[in-house]
Amino acid sequence: MADLAQQIRDAYAAEQASGAVATEAHQIPRSYDDVTDAWLTAVLGAGTPGAKVTGHRLDVPDEGTNNRRRIFLDYNDAGRNAGLPKSVFCKATHGLANRLMLGHSGGIICEVTFHNRARKLLDIEAPRAYLANYDPVSFNSIVVLEDMTDRVQFCSHDTAIDRARIEAQVDLLAALHSRFFEAPELDTTFAPLPSWYDRFNNLKRFHLEESCAAGFQAAERVIPARLFARQAEIWPATLRSQELQRSLPRSLCHGDVHLRNWYITNEGQTGLGDWGVVHKGHWSRDLVYTISTCLTVENRRAWERDLIARYLERMEAAGVPRVSFDEAMTYYRRALMTAFAFWTLTLKPTKDFPDMQPPAAALAFIERMAHAIDDLDALDACKG
Image: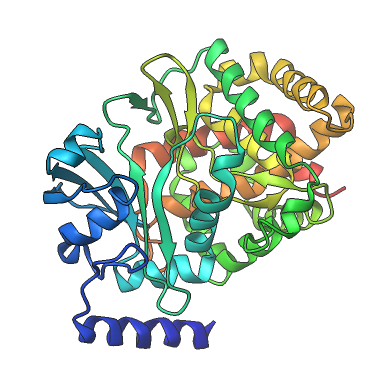
């Protein structure tokens, strides 16, 4: 870990000192201020003879785990006539702190691999990238995506999800998971992607246990009293959850399917964005993570069993070997713990896990997932 950190720091310093300017598509700008019309032309106009970007404007910064910006574009006649995009949405790791976190955790490799190798093979509603690239030494990266601002509504933690919407979300997960269930591509096309076990191990290096414990304590008012009294069991159950999934059948999984990563198109179609945690793992974690964060506690309790049954039916119809409901429920209960960790870690920002999510969203999702853990006896399920 220390060697990689020093490698990234050294490469970052050399890159900043070089003054290099990106003008070709394979080059990665050092910052958004270093983005040039020539580079944008190479990325967006390569398939359009004579097209050129003649000017661009950066939207306001949007900083978090990634450095995010919209870029507004002007073209010559060839570019305008070809209907090239008037704006794009970019995710980058220009900052040193971003590179250190996402380089160590594997987030950069995951998102770039998804857009370059997986997206074209999936028949689901998800963003498309014009370019996805990273440097394996400096871990500078950039993903240039279609700007979906005008064609979709992004969900927030308080978006009301009705029965039809959650069924569409479950169906999308089944389409994703069944497409690559135990597929040979997992070890060839998707070889760069980590397993879920390795992905979570990488996060544990960043004092994950301490961050999750601090977030759990800070969220006491939204956690059922019975569960809060069992705090000492939370981290051991989380580690056991990780271990129990290690030998289960694999597929391509999204990994961070909380409500804020879903969207609804203007035509009413359900979509799933932000593929920075994509990995090779078992489907149960995506399923329980979606249902437990997207639904109110009351609706989850009312619809949960039907939704699991629906998911299993969709998977079996797509050719995945049948899994009994009871077996699926065991997987589902156990998988909840590492999903819960993804949100307790966000509530108390630290050097390792900076301010990544709005506190209101973190509390809403922690509350929903904590009630699911309590309702489903997830702690005890991880003892088996």
